[in-house]
Amino acid sequence: MILLDKPIEMNDIVAAPAASWWPLAIGWYILAAVTLVTVISAMVLSVRAYRKRRPRRLALRQLRQQPPETLSAITLLLKQATLAYVPHHNTLNWWDFLSEQLSSRQRRRYQPLLASLSEASYQPHVAQQQWVEPYRDFAVVWLKQALPLSTKQTKEQGDD
Image 1: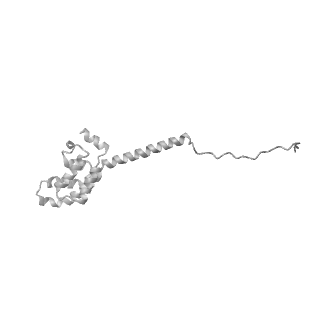
Image 2: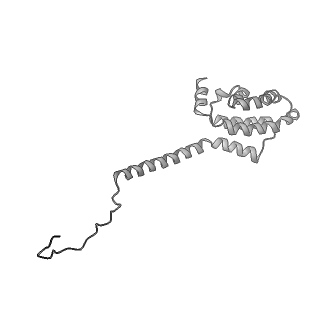
Image 3: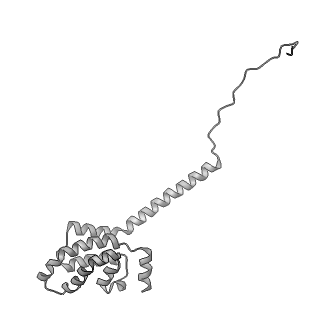
């Protein structure tokens, strides 16, 4: 043991000040910037997608609220919605165009209906009535699945 001649003056122990969270490290600023850019980009893309699907939404709403009573009225509604996405010259063979936009399973399901409709559309109004309801159902399915065209389909339509 060491003996001291003079007492040593000791000071009180002072704790270090608490670490401040401000200013932030550079990594936090980068994370905030990346998050902000991601959120803004997602919002812009969502608004664009919403606006792009407007013709489809309007056609579906019209089919639900004021269902067309004739084959020609349903065809007109489908053509109006389609022309918002596809140039007219790509839809000249209308019944084939409708079929091409469906998946292979849906195409097999609706091919007999489309073949019948292409002939029934030239029949008298009374003979067309049996096809109105199935065509209306097809129109709803087609609008939901085919429009808007995917980027790949749009390029294929442009190449033709």
